[in-house]
Length: 242
Image (cartoon, rainbow, N blue to C red; front, side, top):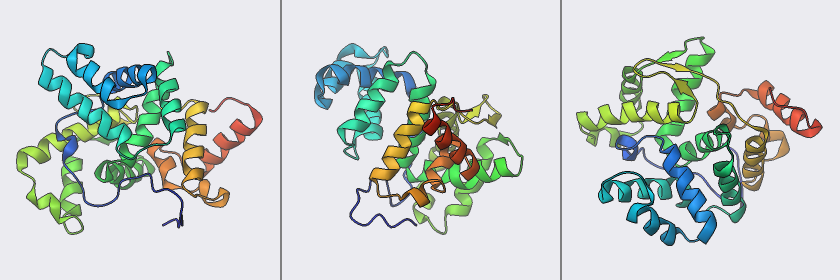
């Protein structure tokens, strides 16, 4: 574990939570939230506008729940203004890859279960050249995690089923997986501005230049140290990131 000393702690810690059992990636809704937030810079005003009809869902209760999810994912860790500025820029970008790649960093960092699923199931499977992943694989992971996370034993069978399905859908929505019932692991497209965003995020958390290349957050994009070195070199020289 990296010792960040007095540096900010901008990631979730603690037990696994089943909160993602009811909603998936919400990419379009997150984009709307950020675009409206950019106009008023007030979370409550943004929430009210979306709940009152700013979202396309017909049910007010559904709109309310969606906004709560988006706010929890984006704002509960009290991000510094520059993070929100970057996310707004990604939301305004016509290229959808920027926002999706940024959400693939921020949403798992605020959900210990989703983060662990990527690090301990998706990444090892890719290294074994096994690209297919299904809901049963997530269920096996939950079974294996019960000793370290006994909170899993309190979840109902229905909750576990929905959670396993939604976790994979979230990763598909953010570009890490492809497919429907039988999903395939796929390296997401990460624009240079999102790479810069993660570099700054890690550096401000206290990660040193020596630690940066090997930080596990890069694996949220399925990047190993060699891939990170190449991307950082491309940023330094102004070349396109391959």
